Image (tube, rainbow over all chains, first blue to last red; front, side, top):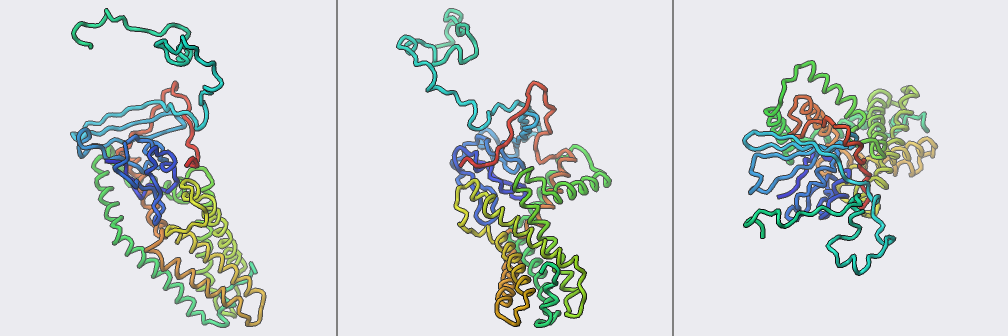
Length: 156
Length: 266
């Protein structure tokens, strides 16, 4: 299933066209409103749903985990820095969640990896990934879980 | 030119009753086109079904006074200033086009019905409103069509690619533009030369396309959009909110979110 657009809400601004990672949100050539041109290719990332300033986009979830009668809707308030979710179950249960917006502005905060130090052979062979631990904003050793603390028979 | 009533000069060659009948026919075309559009799309039926469904999930009952205040606020804020377009170029262009068209149409109707005989003395204000309205429509319409159109701005299409969705805006621009040129040529007193007559014909044809093409263009959005805005704000007030979550009671630690950027990253 996929995203769909409430035509009375859409004003054809193009935010969803801009943000869709699958490039399947396009503008209808007759009424100049957004539409999902290839619903089968929609992976329900909710990028367009969150980007729409008019709350004009909704999603029909896959029926195996989101049965008919449910609703998952989102409100993005950039001035507050919040994304609110409302999950409505078909038995009437309603759950509300609020999370912070963590998206960075377009084109900013791109790490300049080419300008960084080249890793030496010894660093390449370690378990530590490039730029760790400094990249995680810590100078300490990375935390590890000793194997003998595992419960026997549970892990492989 | 700006102080001349073009319909009063026109009445020397075409009787006023013909111009008045033409205007009534255009209104009739809009009514018929909108009704056929409603029947074909079933959008009004869906709209009321949806409103009925939304009412079931309302958390509070709205009184008549509250309902009226929501509608009044929507008319003043959402409809009169087209707030859904945000604070950007699209909104300014839309307001220019919208108010330009309204002024142009009102001035046309007043001049055609009240001051269309060659002997009538038209108050200066009406021709000025008519010309200013036409100029505003052309400015707003061209700004939108050349630069702000989503096909150009987000879909990376060239500005000269014309699609069916352009029927409304192009017909609107053509009507105002041909009207202005016709009025200008008429004011030059060309002594029965062909110029102004050609532009009168173009003005009439563009009007026919604009008002006769309601079914195929997005003309009727000016009737649907206010209804949708009122329903949206009523749903917000009665708590149903079309299943949307309530506005966040933002914790301070969340800080400022990034602003939506204009779509241009195609």
